[in-house]
Image 1: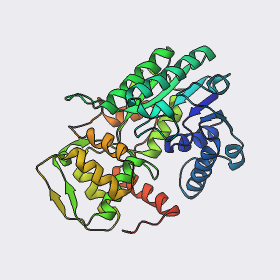
Image 2 (image 1 turned 180 degrees about the horizontal axis):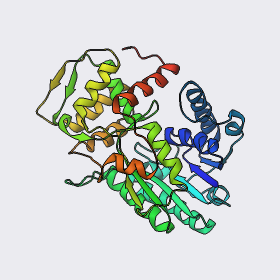
Image 3 (image 1 turned 45 degrees about the horizontal axis):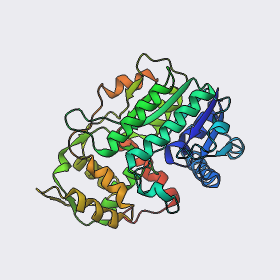
Image 4 (image 1 turned 120 degrees about the vertical axis):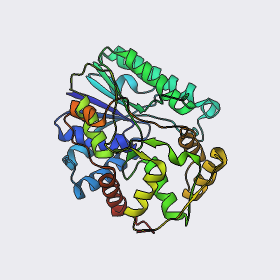
Length: 334
């Protein structure tokens, strides 16, 4: 099958591309910076060689056709989508636009993401793409979505409207070595002597192992489903406090908890960004979503069975991700 992976330099795209090649598909990638995409794919191949994931031939991956393109302007999309049957849309803009992007830097996140999605969907429709597979976020049941989650929902609607067979997978926190949300949690455990936990510590979610997510995404190219929107999750329901405790245990460190009664989300997100040396806009986007439980609409095992995937536990996911992380960068707390 002829497949396009957009966002190939991101951690999901870099994990998915070798998997699709190993499964025998003809894969093309879309990236604003092809060299960055090749570096991300080379790094992922090293991780795959050390791990237990499906291994793709190195020559096949590094000879991959990477098309330079930009969904914000539409540049390169006709060339990238030519002859493609299934296209993956794995592009998200959680932080500020980059320097040199002119008026884009002043454009609200929701407008920027919607415009990019419309460019991609329109080009895919014109190219005769049969299915778009979009990876979005779980939707809250009992509270209004944040601007970030609302933006993802709008992008999802655009992708589903593009072709009758398009699918949207929704996930919460992905546990993987390059997942920025997971890295944020690990860095907080590593660098803080005390875990300072605001009231959002009690809210629950179901993080998913990156290996399980990639397996489901890969099979989404061909799996025939009655549903067009599917919540994917791991088997364990955990509060954010429990996740941090489990990560600390896996890292073999003791971090006493300091439980606060005041939210302090805006200031806390910026302090966390400074501690972990991350973009403040990313941490604000992530912590704004900590308003309540974020859980899938159906049992995780039931959804995984649709794709024939056996789920890993949260602890197994954390151990695997930390091993991959330490293979390229030591963690001080370990």
